Length: 336
Image 1: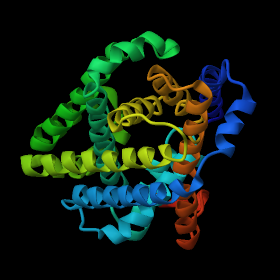
Image 2: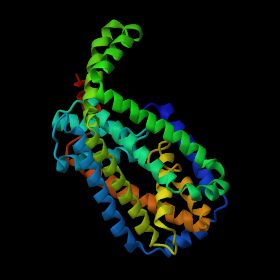
Image 3: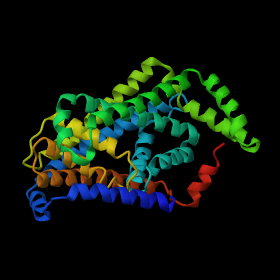
Image 4: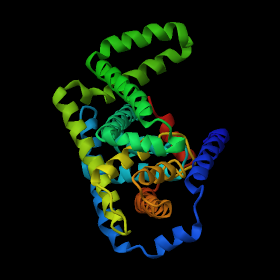
């Protein structure tokens, strides 16, 4: 990754960490962690892994028009992608799993990336749905969230962006020939002649990855699967909550999940340091939770989300004999 991207992410994380830690007494946070019942991490991690399996199934469904890859094959690759997102900046794990899929299943990287982008768009729509479901509660959150600002306004802008991208992808999937014609017409003016054929090929592969969006039935299937995935992740929030003397509703945790995951789309240091923690603490504080307790819970939740899937992804990565080096770059260059 370029150094400026890395350091820009670190700078953003430091700003969020400042807001997360401002006014905290570390001994109070440590006391909450000492008193936690860590048994509740076990069902939390297990339900999260079920969610990762559901993600692998959704990816299998999205890839069907390109190639039928079993869910059992995609689960390790999905875990590798999560590992990459957690230890590399700029969500490099998304590219990493496309490269791994290319190496072992021969799926075009651009087609694979198209399905991954579709996943992220549906994830964004569901996250915004979680936020809008709690609109009656947002007034009190907005009033006390400080640096987060006007959540309602940000959510409306986010909804416009994600839904706009989704509509664009749906149109591109339904009318691929017209999209290719448009790309060729634009390339005539914007792309040097020696690169145009490569651009056409990448565009065709990418549009092939959108093929699952051509059927309304398939779109609904992907959407409902995305809801299940994020409800399973919220269930992990709920299980980890029971490790602390903390009691908020499942809907509150859905709201926290939505805001936290939307915040992690902001560039940050690897592992979403700060961008996960500060919004999570702010949401709980808005519901009257003591900041030290909110910080202890959010920190443990972050660790429980980060460590198991990163370790599992690293295991599959090593077992596959992969390395983040020139060998992977050569696989990328094989893309036609």
